Structures are given as structure tokens and as C-alpha cells.
Image (cartoon, rainbow, N blue to C red; front, side, top):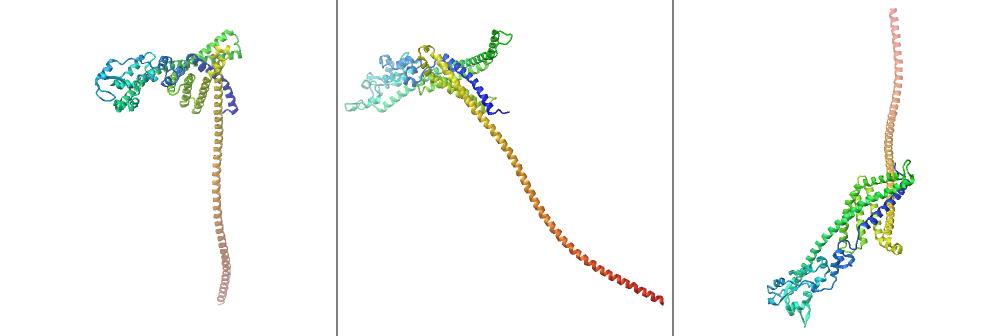
Length: 515
């Protein structure tokens, strides 16, 4: 028998009280408990991105890149970069051709010019991240002094060019003439040299950053996967333990110590029962270990990708990590419902998980504000972190349970409406069957009326036939009466004739007798 709407409301209210306990404990143990103890989230995530390195402050740069970050902001000092090796100079001078003019030049007058100046290479912060200049500048020097960035040119070109862009230098006007005109520079050669240099520097830096960040993403991803998996597994076991202790204490207070047992024996027995239930949760904990590990790795990767475009504060990093595990569970249950749930029930449970994710995320974002407010009270400063976590965790759990209750009510009303509609449809179908029966009865009645009409017409025909037969019988009767009358008359005449004959016979016999 389907429960009534009132009964469903009572069931949901009781479930709301139970969910409040479950959600509050889960929030305090999970995002606002174990996570706080196990994770040290930082602005920008675990891996320094080029975006954060170039645009954000030191707080958004990973600790291992702090020296590099500081080096990238130091004033350019050429003396700190390695000089060009003599072998490189010799290789460039050997042909005796000026790379910017194309003319033959005495090799003794040729010098190695950095197409992209050392100052510009040093001033590009991306290069410092790529080549880890916090340890040393050797790698940056090696790249800058590569032959792809060097051109052999006459010292009359190299000396005035200094750290300028080669094309800008060519357009510089001196005594009414451009440097290109004055020094007979070949624009095509200069453009080719600049393009080759820029492509080489960009390609080399990108390759170095790719190798660096790939290794760091994998390393930090596996570390966070292990931490998140462990947190999820511990969360399952601790949640069962705390809930079990809570329920056993409540039962003990309500029913007291069983007769014949001491309080110590009762407590020991109940603790044993709680531990047995905790041990039964180990398979679930192992499942959560793998799910948490996958979520931890993906959240680290997602944080890295987002920081490639925007700089995320540490609270957002926490939200990404905590929210991703909830999203993973929600979409898993919606897209791949367990065998014991219908598609609608899976959607209901998925929406409840999503609401919990939203509430937890809002709570995590507000925690810093609450912590700051609590810390403003001097004697609460030492416990501000603990109090803010407990307070926000409790509120998040209560709000999550309330929203879950509203979702259940919404689906209950939907289910009640569906049952009501089913009843209406069933009644409509019964009415349809009844109407169909009436229609068939009406059709049968109409057919009977038609048959009656045909019978009446037939009866009328028979009556007319009977009338005609009656008239014919009357005529026949009249004819018979006339015939009978005539016959009587004929018989009378015959009798008279016979009597006359008989009389005549007697007369003859008498006559003969006389003779």
C-alpha cells in the first residue's frame, strides 16, 4: 500500500533529523577536519604556472621556484651571464660574411651579435621559470649564446646596436639617414635572423617548461592522490566510528545498563559492536581510497590548468579539491545508477550530493572570514582555526541536510502526483471501457431498432397480403355462395326433373299395367 502524503512528510522529517547528524559529522571530519590536518593548500596550487609566475605575487609561486621568481625580478647584470665561448666566435667568423649585410668582411673585424639581446632574454620572466635561474644562470646563458641567436657582423653594426632590436635599430635615424642606409643593412637578412632567433628562444623555453611542469604535475598529482585517497578512506571509517559511538551512547542513556551487567561490561560490549561495524566498512574505505586518489590527482591537474589562465587563491584550490570528489560521486550515481536505484532515484541522490558540494564550497570560501572574525577576540585567537572549522562545518552540514530534505520533498510530491495521476488515468481508462460498452450497447440498440423497423415493414407487407387474401377470400366466398345457390337451384330443378321422370315412369307403368 502506497504511503499517504502525510506519512511521507513524517518519514522525511525523521530522515532530516538523522541526516543532520550524518552531514554535520561528515563535514567536520572531512572538508573541515581531515583536510585541514592533511593538506596545506597554497595560492596558485602546487605547480607554478607561467601565468602566475609572470603576473601574480610571490604567494602564487611554489616554494621550489621562489629563488627563480626572485632572480627574474633582479635588475639585469650582464656580468652574471657567461661570456660567449671563443669557439662560438671562431665558428661565426670563419666565413668572413656579415650576417646583416651579406658582404665579405675581414674576419678580424667580425663580432658575434645577440640577435635577441641578453637584456631582453633576461627580462623575459618565462625564461627564468623555464631554466630555473634561481640556482644559476648557466642554462639561460647557454640558450642566449646558442648559434641560433647569434649573427657574425661588423663591429660598426654591433657596437651601436647594443641591446636594441635589430629592426628597430635599422630604422633609427642618424644625421638624416637610417642606420640601414648608413650601414647598408639587408632588411631581408635581418628579418630572417630575428625570426630564427625568436622561434628558437620560444621553442626552447616552451620545451623546458613542458618538461619541468609535466614532472611536477605528475609528482604533486600522485602525492595529492595518495593524501586524498587516505583522507577518504579514513573519513569512511571515522564517520562510522563517530556515528556508532553517538548512537550507542544515546541508546545506553535511553535504556540504561542491561540487568546482570556492570556499566563497564555494557560499555565494552557496545564498543565491540561499534568496532565490528567499523571493520565491515573496510571494503567501502578501500573503494573510497581509489575514488579519492583519482579525484585528488584530477583536482591537482585541474588547479594547474585553471592557473594557466587565472590566479586562484588557496581557498579556491581547496574548493576545487573538495568539490571534485563530490562532483565525481554525484555524476557517477546519476550516469551509472546502482542496480537497487531507478533512474529517478539516482537523480534524486545525485542532486543531494551536488547540493552538499555547493554548501561545502560556500563554507570553505567563508571560513577565512569567520576565522578572521573569531581571531579578533584575543582569548579565542589560539583556537580560531578549530572554532571556524567546527562552526562552518556544522552550518554546512545542517544546510546540506535541509536542502536534501527539500529535494526529497520535491520528489515525494512528484511521486504523489504521479500516483494521483495514475489513479486518474486508471479511472479514465475504466470510464473509457464503460463508455466503449455503452457505445457498443447503443450500436446494438440501434441495430435492434433497425431490425424492428424492418419487422414492422415486413409485418405491414404481411398485413397487406392478409388483406388482399381476405378480400380474395370474400370474393371467393361470395362466388361460392352464388355457386351454392345456383347448385341448389339446379338440384331443385334436377329433383323436380327426377320426380317428373319418376312420375312419368309410374304413369307409363300404370298404363302398361292396364294394357
